[in-house]
Image: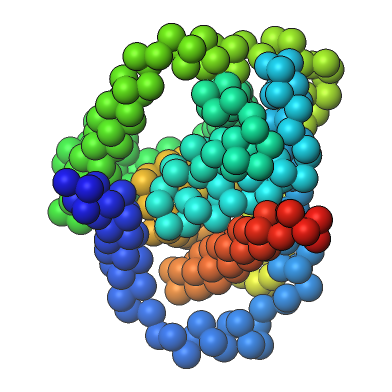
Length: 327
């Protein structure tokens, strides 16, 4: 049973990502990829975008610590940063495991209350969800024609959803739905186990409500907005790496960013496959060629994923050397 659970947690998301990626890149000429990276890509813009990816995670750690303090926990900021770095890196292997892992890191290295940490993470996610929904609404209102075109191309229009879905679309949708149900079932079982202890429920509630008692609500809001502005700049600046996306503008990047943010919800490692497909479709709707759009999403997602992995490796090394006060 344990082996089956490990397979479902790791094997199924990887298989889903591999299937989508194979379907997208099955006709790609790989010499075009090497040529784009070697001769057509402006690496200076890519290097300029990477610090914003780091900044987004650091701001998330700073905001997390701000929520933990009213709950009676005072972990070191450096540990919070390492925990967030590791959470993102671990999610490259097992989707959604990072949120639990970062709470475990604080418990191990700072002695914080695990269930209280889980409560603060849930609070963070609720706030992020509200911000993303507001951003999506603003983007939709400014780019309604593009979104309607996107819905028509992807078969998401209300009147023709079932007629326009391809066989591949049905397979991907059913697979994602089944995996999501499985994740909910596993999480609910785990929560039922923990909830038998009254202290767990009390600590979880304390973490959820801690946001009401943060020292500076305005600073908390600044951190929250800063996280998503950093994510956006991390993505938008990569448009200038290629001549076929450099002229699309900030609003086109915002549409692609929002659509890509929702695509990452599909349970694959770092949104692999689903993010590629969603962003590629948006770029094509804005006039980018199919080949160029496919190359863009592959190059950008690969480099940004490598950044997440490197940050995770660095944090893992720092925490391993923590006793020697090396980091």
